[in-house]
Amino acid sequence: MNERIRVKRVRLIAPDGGQIGEKDIDEARWLAAQLGLDLVEVAPDARPPVVRMMDYGKYKYDQSVKAREARKNQTRTVIKEVQFRPKIGASDYEVKRKRVVKFLRQGDKVKCTMRFRGREVAHPELGRNILQRLYEDVEDYAEIETMPRLEGRNMTMVLVPAKDIPTEKETEADDE
Image (tube, rainbow, N blue to C red; front, top):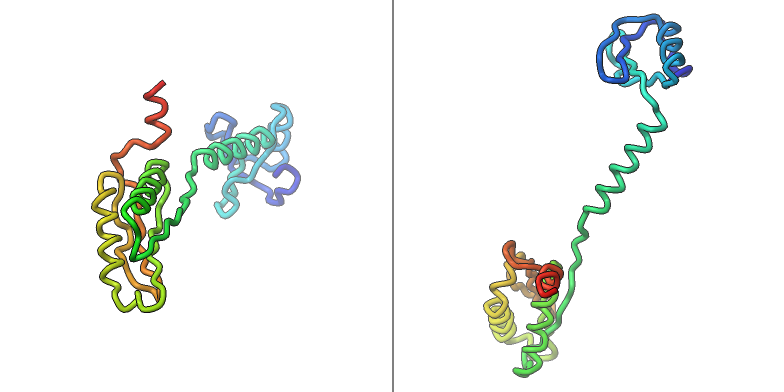
């Protein structure tokens, strides 16, 4: 940038993007100074190197604004966990099913964990049946990312929100 450019001749580009042509570096600096702009090297490997006249402070500010906008639009994937037991009661199952639906409507992934204790691990099909029933109950809201699989004393299944369900925020806006 400006005085740090060490070559004798450069290809100069105007602030609007038009080509000015090959110029001596001193002449390019003089032109940039007359317009109150900076001389920024954009292609140092070209022969001759390409430099552009621009307001470097404004350019850096625009870059930071774009980066901030990109971060604002970025979504973080949150994984919520709901734990079950093989001998879960009907009302407890309903409470946990509603919680899974709530998380999915908020757009979060849900990790459903079936925890086995003692000899319960000898009958993993009981846990698999409950997880399968859960998926069938929330099928309108979810897709299976990871099928139920046994890892030690826990069986886990990961559900992701379905593409076509309205999120909780959208349904609240519709109600108003």
